[in-house]
Image 1 (cartoon, one colour):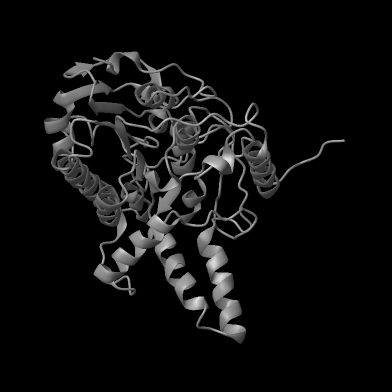
Image 2 (cartoon, rainbow, N blue to C red):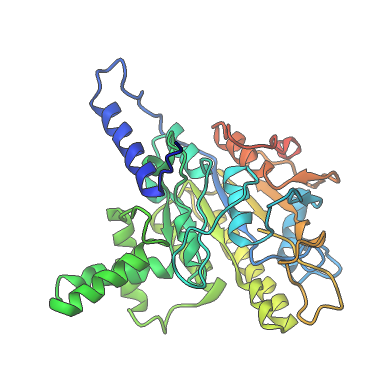
Length: 388
């Protein structure tokens, strides 16, 4: 007989094991984890699916800061690919999971909500590896996520029983801000209003109602209170789209000091509305966001000289000129499997272009080598040429 465990069951088992280890005799207890001193790593998902031509090609790029100012400062892999094995989907959450876990897996939608796709990591994420190896609090391992991708707020931990919820990361997103506001209001409500608010909170706090909720820590609640003081509660004052992600990233760097941060830019996906300028303008917005984050690193003693950037798309896009809507990625074409990766910062080789095919899954082991942990479930080897 086969027994299927839900994500909630797996999380409870993991927490039970952690509690047992904590109460065990010293000979069986987990050894103290050392502090992490760097380098910090900022992974920027040049997301929403982009082509090489409009990003790293200096003759046609809508990303001039990346293509002209940054590329000479690091190592570029222009021929990175997403392997075309059966069941591998070239889309946003899947591409992010390729990056975070170092594996190509087939993912099933676990959401019970109409029109929503929610996937969960099967292998440990980079955040879990880091927190298992070092004494790093959850609020210093961050996913900065967009309000139109609430399903990706679930990627804070995997279903791996040896890692999982014990080493979860945190999310900063407008969805989580709305949850923060609701938590503050529920105590003032009663009756049906309170019941409705509690239901709304359950939906906001987790991407799927079957998923264990990771409660925000004190530093995160303080972060959202700081945000509320500056921008209020209406959502009409703060930036939106990928400009919002840049603003959240800059504030997180200032107030939370993450050691590992993933910025999930996404606006190029607005091309699905059919206007090519939605795609090209979004690339320019991400480019400006990268500039602001790089300049913030250079100005902050905590990050300056002790940070590595990795910039890479979640997936590519079709280059078929006969498509009614240009730049699609859902049809498993060759171009949708074509991505790239660029690294620069402390210890990274400069003015280097590696013209050989490499896998998107290689990013996980590369981050592990930079940060001093073994991403042991990752399929591909590290991108060795990046190291100076």
